[in-house]
Structure formats: C-alpha cells, structure tokens
Image 1: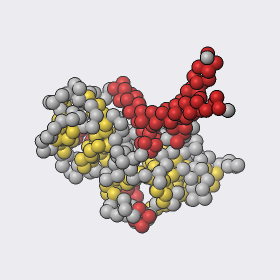
Image 2: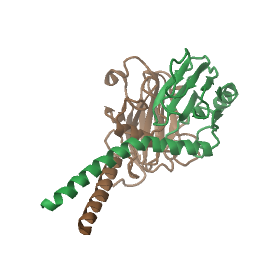
Image 3: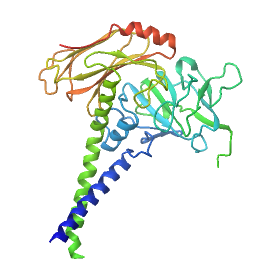
Image 4: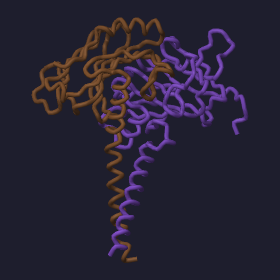
Length: 201
Length: 170
C-alpha cells in the first residue's frame, strides 16, 4: 500500500515538473531563452502584432512579460527583433556591421541594441540606438561596432560590452497597411557583416 | 504494465495542470515583481514620476528605449474605490499615455497629438462608466507616459512638461 502511494506521489511530482518545465520552455521563460520572437518575419526581423494586447496567446503573453514587459498594443507601436545578420549568423560584439534602410511607414521609429539579458549593454558610449530624428528622409545607414568609427558624421550604434546581442525595431504610430500587409509596406533594414575582430568559429 | 496505468494517467494530468498553471500565472507573477521593483525605485502609488534618462546605468525594466522619456504611476483601485484621475500634459512631439493591467495587457492607450489627454480610471466591474472614463480589467497595474526625447536637451524639456502630469485618487 505504501509502495503504491509512493509511486503515485512520484508520478505527481514528475508530472508537475514535466508540465512546468515544458510550459516555461515553450513560453521562453527559461534562463537561457531571450528573444521576443513572433510569427511575422521580415528580412530576418521577427514580430507579432498581438504583443501587448489581450489577443496574444498564453505562450506569447508569457514570453513578452519576461522579454518585453510594458509593450504597447499594435495600434500604437509594432515591434520587430533581429538577432542575426543578412547571412544568418548571430550578431556578435566582436564583429562590425552596416545596417541600412529607407523611410519607415510610421510617425517615428527607432532601432535599439540589447544584450542577452534584454537590457541595454553596460557601456557609457551613449550610442545604443538610431532613430528617425537622425535618419532624416530617404536612405540611411549606421555602423554597429564596439568602437566608434573613424569617419566623421557616421551614424553609430555601440555594441561595446553587448556580447551576443540583438536589435529591436520600433514603429510608433504605424501607417495604414502596416498591420494588414507588413511585407508590402515595411522595408526592414538589412544588417551586413563588415568584419570581425577575431575568428568567429 | 497494468499497475503503471494509474500512475501514468496521474502523471499526465499533473503535467497538463502544471503546464496550464505556469502559463496562466507567469504574466501576473512577472508583473507583480515589476510593480514591486517600480515601488522600490520610487515610482509612487497614484502619482507620476519621470524616470531619469534611460541609460545602461538607470534602466530598470527590460528593453527600455533610450530615445524616450518615461513617466510611470502605479495604481491600486482597492485604495481608490472612486477611481483615479489621470492626465498627460500636452507635448509637441510624440507622446502616449498607456495603461497596463496586472496581467501585462495594454488595455488603453491615448495618443498625445500635441494636446493634453485625460481619463478617469474606474475599478473592475464598474457599471455605466461616464464619458471620458475607463474601467480597468484588474485592480492593480501601471500607467506609463512615453515621450520622444532622443537627446538630453529633449529630456530636459520633457522634465518641464511632465510637471503638468496628474495621477491621483478621486
């Protein structure tokens, strides 16, 4: 009788562990998970337009609670996150990149760099983002590097102390059509690898 | 094998239950921790506080934008049963007044459009809310004002504007 009770007790413990850990894994709540992810992909940028709203499913709501708490609903802002360059390699502090894009379909937009803990990396460069006020109209580009570029008047996002990092694109007050046809409306910025300080392999 | 049938069923039921429980409770658990952290950072209950300019040294919530100035107000409608009057002062550039419930949902956002925005936040279950008022889905939550401030000068200008913000129990 006691043996049978212990068997059932162990079954409950195993079930609770399996269910809890699987939920955390699927919702991105494990310590090793970091990206906001999403169902929409634009040129390597991932987003989900249910972010911040009650329409988000339970998995995505839990993921955003950890990785993007206090995100706005899509009528106000849409978010995309990218963790790889144009060749699909992980973005790395040891490498330099050129991010290029054009005008964005929003009243205001920005691209911000975050470390693997979802925070701004610990440096004092005051160059952790690039936004519409600096891009002006039309085509623009910015260098992503751990050291400020030598060239004058070069837009720069500092990756110093960022390690393995990602970028978040925010479109505030998105134009009509962004939510219904993001592929056709948004020209998501490209991230081209320029060089690496050390062998990436 | 027959003897294991019962324990396996129990294991599956326990797994499904704990899976759903974690998913359901995770957002409110994380929000509760965030509200506690905001309180420790000095964000008042029923009062706005403009945060310092977002930098690696001042950030407290994941993925802040260094181009925005954030003002936050915690609310607890148990302590304000008649509601909370919330006002965002007029801002020339982009500004929004957003409300988040205890489950992390952004249940209301008012865009500035260069003018002041105001609403009265009512407790859950309030019937017949008047014009210009909003019923909160949960008793606790946080109200956030975002204003465009990509430079220190712009943040200083926002600091002057933010003195006109209001978050107060009625």
